[in-house]
Length: 109
Length: 109
DNA sequence: CCCCACTATTCAGTGTTACTATCTACCGGT
DNA sequence: ACCGGTAGATAGTAACACTGAATAGTGGGG
Image 1 (cartoon, chains in turn red, yellow, blue, brown):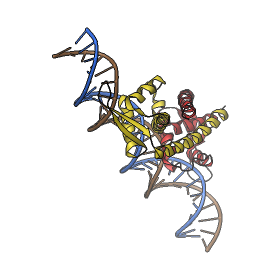
Image 2 (spheres, helix red, strand yellow; image 1 turned 180 degrees about the vertical axis):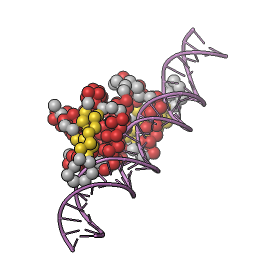
Image 3 (tube, chains in turn cyan, brown, purple, blue; image 1 turned 180 degrees about the horizontal axis):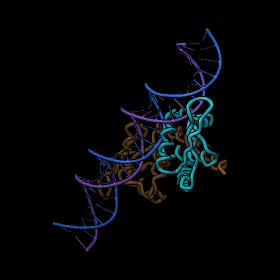
Image 4 (tube, chains in turn purple, blue, orange, cyan; image 1 turned 120 degrees about the vertical axis):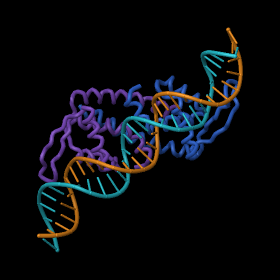
């Protein structure tokens, strides 16, 4: 996927996952699979799990252990109020950065 | 400026600086000042210098030492061909990420 | 029955990046 | 002589995504 994308994901992948969870609860494996479908081809297996653990530690998500028909139990994450608030801040920061970059792309030629 | 923006800058600040240099040659102090005007309020003094050194090491920019009337000589950086190529890749990666996030923002409600 | 494939999570170690804090250096004005 | 503004360098720290491997449960094929 390229080093550029990898570095860009720092800080944004977190927002991406929060945005997914804002739509519906999900578990790690599911999120990873979905990201890959969306074109984040090289998202490493372990990356999403580590991210989810961080989110949980910061109290932005709630967790429920759900037994699965295939394989070990799933840890289903859902966004709580604090997480929703944090997601709003993320969108604000994203909009800011996005606007500056858009300006630069236009002005640069 | 908030932790979110700080983390987002990892990977994008490099592109921002390259985009600036695509418009005109510039030196570190100038770039830092410009970024602050644009609202990147908390860009640390040393950050841009470290970034420019990295860009130089990777051969994406050319450097010219120019004496200044006030203070020590300036190191004026300009984008070379390799840098322009790298900037294009940056825009591609940015567009990709930007589209995914836009989708998520709309679909998320 | 055993191995394999698929599902699902965890973890130690690494590299990159931006921030903090501090230091050097040059000039002009008071 | 001192200080504020200009200009750059650097050592140490924290955060984050990746690598690679391990663990664990289920079901199907040989």
